[in-house]
Length: 229
Image (cartoon, rainbow, N blue to C red):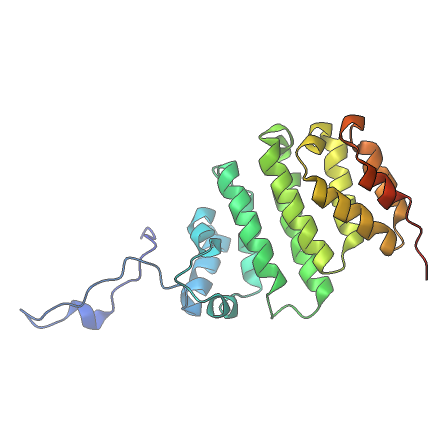
């Protein structure tokens, strides 16, 4: 049976006495039910449901308590997420929103044991988006850079400066036009953070990939910083 995204009626609801007043049916999925989430994840991984069936589970919903939703997440859901990100049918705008919301959830996902585990999930997300969809590099660059910035910022919050700088550098090497779409505050923050983690060379490499007309004094100041113990 095709999944409609609605909560199924219980048998007791179907067998009500004639004339009995039926309770209103909620047309919103019960996202607080961990069993529902597990069932959808399993169906997506088995291939009996399309990956898009989980898309709404990762969208922000003001009517759902963030803490309750995070408690319902399970490690296997990240695999399902990566399958969603690989779907060709997703619009780039929807993909951008999905990546942003997913990165936020990774940062506050309490079941991952340490920072390395959180960073590993972020790396998996970035690989699912960019390595399986090379056409993204030349399509709507502002949206692509939004995803790169979101993933990189999340990595830096987890002290994954090495991976964040390498990720940005790889994207700049793939498509130099992306440099014009990055926020200057993001690039400056990255270049300032690299030296503080003894990665001054990474800051220089990123600066070299930025077109000269976009290079600002703050970038040079960041790259001239000498890390001191």
